[in-house]
Amino acid sequence: MPMTISTPCIAVCTLDRAGRLCLGCGRTTEEIGAWATLDEPRRRAIMAELPARLDAARPETAR
Image 1 (cartoon, rainbow, N blue to C red):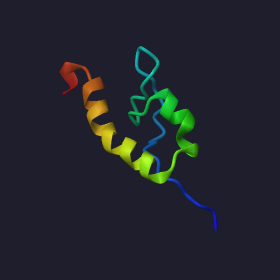
Image 2: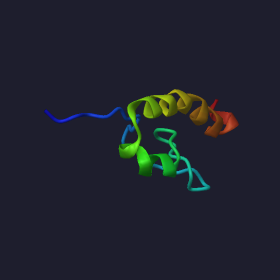
Image 3: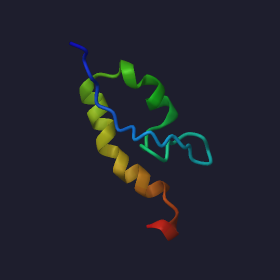
Image 4: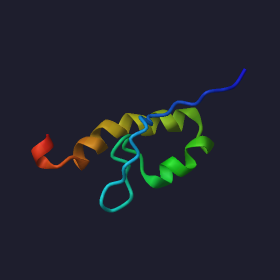
């Protein structure tokens, strides 16, 4: 049986102006690249941070 890994990906892969943060899921490009090699506790810890990251990345007018 294939093992599935948790992912916050919503298939809206758009990077911020700096090219470091995905505006779809909130992960950094480094996290996206390493995602498959991270253990589940680390993935869940990162996912817990994503709502705050996405909120901070939104322009003031969209908040």
